[in-house]
Length: 233
Image (cartoon, rainbow, N blue to C red):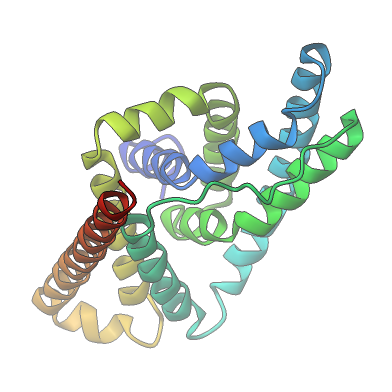
């Protein structure tokens, strides 16, 4: 992939979009960790904590990029990404009430970094896959998406709540990225190169399977939640 070619810009847009789609929980954690601080200190805690989390995210993604070159790990990464895409649709979201708010600047910074590192595995795998093992794409994508997550997280979460189809678009993009990773596994690539129609069929089956399974789980969860609310009232 040539730097700053149309393919490069498309891949960069893909990286940023995937990171934003998966970053809702991380944005909530940042807000919860700094909620007890004075407003004048909150901005510093968010800035420092996000900076530390960004550095860890870049290092972790670089490590994953290297690992994906190991035989069969591209296949494993693709399968993990399929599960992440399904969970994106199936999960109704947690309240994160277990996130402890920091009582000082550095306590909040530490909470943000640790929580983001613990919750960021899905982002790391997805970004590494979407970047197609391109280090510049990883760094640029994270440098663009992380500030948006920090300063525009509330707006983005409101957009997702208002337009639920954004989540489905994200799941489709993740499904495509995952299936593409699997077909590019060195041990499987010759087969898919020899049978391009099967490669397209495989990608379509993966995407449709994720969307259908996630939709069914999401619908079942919504129905169960509605029944519980009716029983309480």
